[in-house]
Length: 248
Image (cartoon, rainbow, N blue to C red; front, side):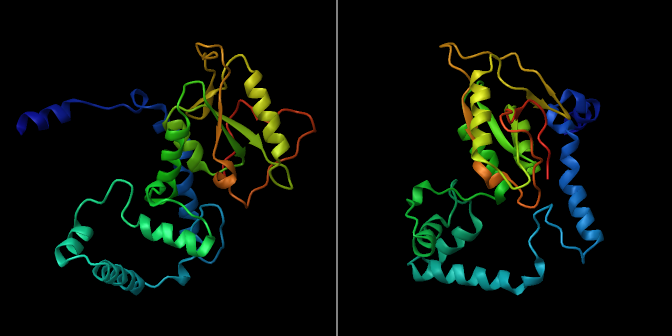
């Protein structure tokens, strides 16, 4: 044990030696937005995406836990199985997938197989998993609307994914602008800038071994904050700018 302590004290980790995403100043954005919310509790802020907690009641936690325990028991689970469900490791894709599938069918008329559902710890984990699954090649490009949610660009930086901003206009996002951006990226001889830290670094990645241009991946407008509008630009200009997207 003493040797391990000596090794840990002797070794030093410098931020510049770690992944570039850890030096990104945008990392402090959400902390700043939350701090402002705490400082001015009467203000209504759409920036951090915080739900209004005036509708919450602490007792609801125990009510919903008891309801779920009763559901397990009514479904035929033994006391041992109920205990295991609460205290043991969950299935990797989540424990309540069948309930989510049932809710989607009854409330939204969407029929999704239970095995196709993944339960995540918040939207941030969902975005990270989606990016990791969709961006499968170094030639892939991720298009985001600008301004956009800082969490999606942060996840892309963490995974070393090339990000290209498609600016919104004053009246919202336009599919025609997205089509222009896709065309511009497919015609680009080099893949777009790879975001590292506060500034983009030009990537030297060419088309793949078969001569194919970079592929385009996107998560649609779900990663966009609705409270911030983009700036208009003249018609006919490409929306794919190799620069940092503005974050909301």
